[in-house]
Length: 240
Image 1 (cartoon, helix red, strand yellow):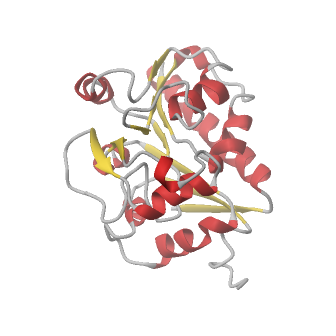
Image 2 (cartoon, one colour):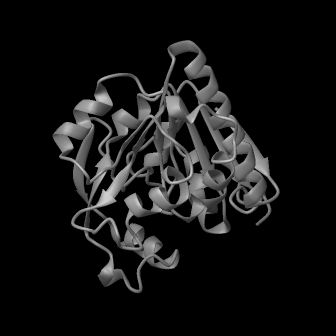
């Protein structure tokens, strides 16, 4: 595990993007292509904004994403397909794009499992989730994707971030990449800024591995890079 603490979210995003671009370059050099997983949410804004500016052979990069609400239109402001199209896919020329919700779970799973994934860009939620694997997360399923029911804190986070006006508007179910498939990524990079993530970050680092704090599983990965800013690292740094 490598922890990098930046002064600001913008600097965090730049450092995380540089690491992702470096790993993509290594994969392309070794395999002629790179397969990446991208996460979404407010915490990923600066990382994606920096990443699209990096000198990367995007035409050799295949992208998957982590999750999507069940039944949401790809034109809805809170759709993760729209999020990634607006902030990433429309700005670089990728080899291939695989959106959750745009094809069946079976077809998407088969494509994901057809070859190894090089880099998983995996955020950490306020409730400690990774993707939409809310606590208690299923660490054991062999499925690549599955439908899950979102917990209250997860749905509240979507309101706090401005994607929905109220908790009642947040869909109760989503399709998510499962924990074992996330952990199968050769490298994992997590960009986790903001004070609202400080408790989740502290619990992830200091508590034992547990499905009740799903992000703790990331500590068992052989190559995990965690990028924090001073706010998200504040409870680790003894600032409060």
